[in-house]
Image (tube, rainbow, N blue to C red):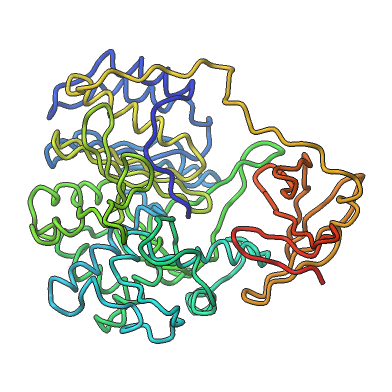
Length: 475
């Protein structure tokens, strides 16, 4: 799913946790005050899902603990050996797999991807493996396409179907190497390249080249949705009526996600960063190499943050960090390393939790005396940034909006219908009310997170709409 890079602790929760935890900061290498650590998880729901925590110092786990239930139904508590879906945290393993093949001389990271994947369209310019790693390929995110078609992660979608969606894209979002935009498609294709070149499934390759050598016995790429996984956590979402509901993803995509692991196994992965059995010098150098745009400028995910081998690389309070969050249906994860101080924090959760604020606060507990920049001033509570304000859309325009909109390239169909005095957007079996209705630049229908650009002809008639860069014509 879409990545969220490390940000300043700006929420009320983050400020409270930071104040509580930094009061008892420990020297590097020492075990943290577990009472202070436990306080970071006080906001977890009572008798509900929770998180597994790993704090690693100088290549050793100094805190491994579970909070909440792996199975709410059966009251099975989370432990350091509970297995979680870590979502996009998986991307670093996929990137390393491609880099290992390059180290073995079986591919070059500057190869055109069509050398291995000839089914990919010829866009008139090569796309390299390195551009997949750096999110600069211009290939649209397949999640966007599937969601536009009305599917959700609860709908069964096979790897072959995902590949068909990607190979069916007739145009790039931007010329390769000119922009950075997070795309699960790139890492899905990266996984498929690993399979084609190695002659193995991605899971088998990573088992033989990463997990096995490091002794990560509870870690695997979940390629078979029906596979029974001992000690696996169930995923949950909040039920609007109260409590929780089961959340089970039916997407079979690998490469961009689908690694299952534990905080105890991640301790082995983290330790090897310093020991170099898998993180060999040449592999590490390539994993941490900052990419370049075509104009020679470094590839940045946001100002001061670089996207390298499945990792965000940046600075926090003057200290270098590298890490990646993950989000899957019913799961959230984060693994962040401060390499110069040899401190890492892993959080694996089986529901939607304020994971970044907690991970940052736990890092403060371990690193308070190491920071070289002052703590940023928390935002004043109760005063969120003002949202852009638009103008009311004239009724004459709104009356033209209902209808069917179609995109031939992705076989995507939207229906806008008048309902209850407003407009409703229908995508397959899914529906979303469009409101508040405002105009930005006279042609954008503001609808919360959904922004649809209404396209009109010279006579002012609505003839189509644009969403996520895809143009839909009105039938």
